[in-house]
Image (cartoon, rainbow, N blue to C red; front, side, top):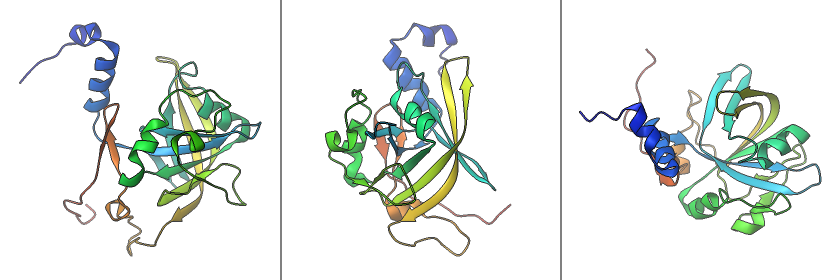
Length: 201
């Protein structure tokens, strides 16, 4: 067993350290979050720290980095109160990853990376047309995490859109059939395969 202590980790180059720690916590859900500024400029950004917070009411959260590093998504959510999450499949990995680049707030990332906006009458935030699983959220809370300057953004689920209905009779969504990907580290993406489905314990 190899031991890597806290002081060794602290001595590493920051990108090496970030990649190591990001990988350590395991495979993560990854989505494109679509928002619109109060001035009407669409924004699209990839996030890989999304967490289920409860089913009744249906709440989903994500961690936003410090505002100095990643201001646009959280600002747009604060201003409009709505946003979308859009699953990524293998056909759009490169475009999705490119949204992690830093763009000026007046740049439409959809156009910049080659993805298409899709608007629905009941949502003021854009969806990713190419995504096979899309859902809209209403902002419920933003909780600052003082220790590292990040924020837990909590949304209440509004509407879900599936490219086809593959949901089984228990309500389980077989994400591998939609080819939804997962992520590891800072820039690695994986497909998924169901290994075993067990009865409720």
